[in-house]
Image (cartoon, rainbow, N blue to C red):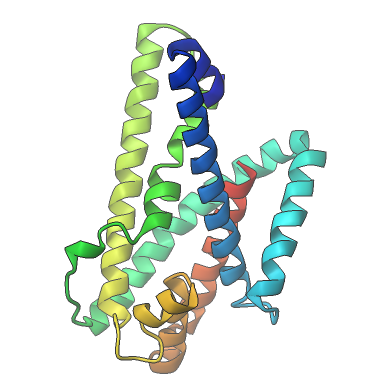
Length: 228
């Protein structure tokens, strides 16, 4: 099943149209997020501007999905395991570095909606793939409960890792008043790992290898999410 089929089954004509529009809007915003985030990560170790990488990334991966969908499944499964493992490593490494800096930061609850990429991709993206996974679950109470518990546990772990990542970034990267601040990254449309990599290279070159690890993780993560 898919989200459109669920809308047809459980909603009336008007509700189904509104739901389909919301799904398409959600899909387009997520794909735009992928198209922005991936080239930003790739540009850190490729001497190519993001304005050039963005259309190349979208066109090439779209062609791979259309022409090689059957071959993608085992590759996506392997890369998903790899990106999950790298996520834990990246958060842990960033936490170690941040603990040595303890950059002061200020709260601004008025900007609670700013981390759109995290809320839609890292957490909200589950709604796009769960109907597909549910097709593989036996329609029995025990299996459905196990599936639900697995989903809730996975979301809780991702939520905790995202909170830890955000906290460690705030403890390491200045929010403003710096050449490589989070504010300057926001103005340039860059993801938080970009000023993080610059700060490591400038102030803590002994940890420069972590920048490559973070960029590899982001590149794999967004590429896998685009495929999925």
